[in-house]
Structures are given as structure tokens and as C-alpha cells.
Length: 290
Image (tube, rainbow, N blue to C red):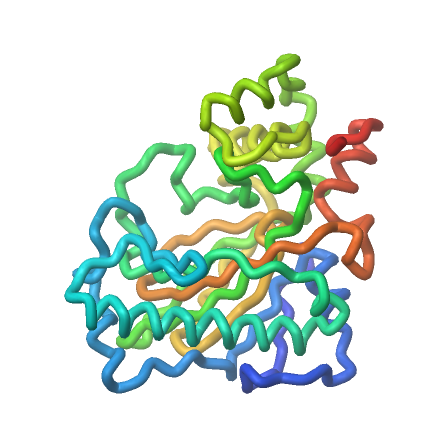
């Protein structure tokens, strides 16, 4: 039986401090840190936001990008109150990761926060955007250049419903399965994509490969059914932390979840060799980021 990649963490406060446990080691070796006692408290006045009607329907998420809230509808006062809730979560998530992973503190860069009000199950979408299929996160229009994607999730479902995930095999065997099917980018393609505005920055060969690994895994239904994996239900009132560019994951069901993304350069990891960038460079035998 494949060992579980879910690692329980007893932390119960967002104002956490290092407790002597090697949470960084767990995270960097591809485990999901599960905090069953850590809930994000939705205030009484904020409970009105636990409804699908606050999203404009153009994207699956309401997102907080710096001081700008996108994808939400409501009066100016309502939108400001919803933004304040997401800001409070974003600030708490930052304090949490600073405490769990103190070595990262000088180097983490806070990305977007998002609020997912819609049900995960039953969404009509293309196979490439179908998050019920095992995948590692890779964003075609927003290249990372190898930076890590550290994400904090909190289930705030008011009816006590869990967020159900599938968690797959470690990254390296997944990469070994699909790397032979990948193709190198055409010369000049990264420049052209950036010039045309199709990517927000220059795409590295690492980003090109990760995008293919994302798509190849999702498209292979035999792999989806037969690969080593486990199903785990994150209860309402729980939080979990994961490197989503490393851990194969899929969401099967759930509604009302908050998420905060952080970016970290590989060089600032405790064990850089565990990063997908370093794994892929070792497997391909070449540098993937110039």
C-alpha cells in the first residue's frame, strides 16, 4: 500500500510560532499538511457571503489581487465587506506560513487570494480545466519560471460539508511516466507568446514542460483510474497547506473554500532538490530556466 501523503499538523491558531516539528521537510517532500483544528472564522455579518450569488459568474473564483477584488457583485459597501473578509484570510494565511516555515519568511511573495463559492462537483468545463482529474498546477498564461506554488486552503462550508480531494503519487514517478511524451518548445515561441500578450511574462522551458505534464496527465483516463492515489475529505472548519505544483491533486466535491497562493524561489527551499524544477532538470539532463 502506498504511504499516505496527508500529514496531520496539530496547530490551532493563525498566530502560530515554530514548534520544533519539521513541517518544512514534510511540505518539500510532497506531503499535504492537514490542520484539522485550524478554522477560519466567518463573522456573523460575513455569513451572508456564504452564497453563490456573490460571484459574477464570469470566473469560478472571486479573487483578491492586492487591493482589488475581482469577480464579485454587490453594492460598494457589500463588496468592501467581502474584500475585508478575504484580506483577513490572506493576512492570517501569511502569518501561518511564516510560523510553520520560518526559513521562508524573508523570501515568500504573497500572490492572489481567492474565494470559491460554487460547487466543485457538476461544473461543466473542458477536460483541460476539469479539476476533478489528478493534476499538478501549471498556469499557461502566467509562467512561474520554476518558482514554487505554496497554497493555503480553508473549508468554510456553513453546512459542515467536506472538501473532498484525491491525492496522487509523488511527482517524480508521474514525471517519468509522461516526460517521454512531451515535446520541446519551438525556437522563438516563448518570445512570440509574450509579444502577443498570451503570456504575462516569458515562458521558460520548465513552464512549457509543466504545462504538457498537466495536460497529458488529465487527458489519460487510464492513468486517472489506475494511478496510485487516495481520497481524503477535508472537513468544514479545517485548513491544509500544500505545494500544488508538486502534489498531484483533484477535487471531487465541496463548496465555499478560501485559498491563498504564495511564491518561493527554489533556491530558498531547505531542500531545493525536491522542487519540480530540479527533478525535471535531473530527468532531462539540461537546464530548464535560463
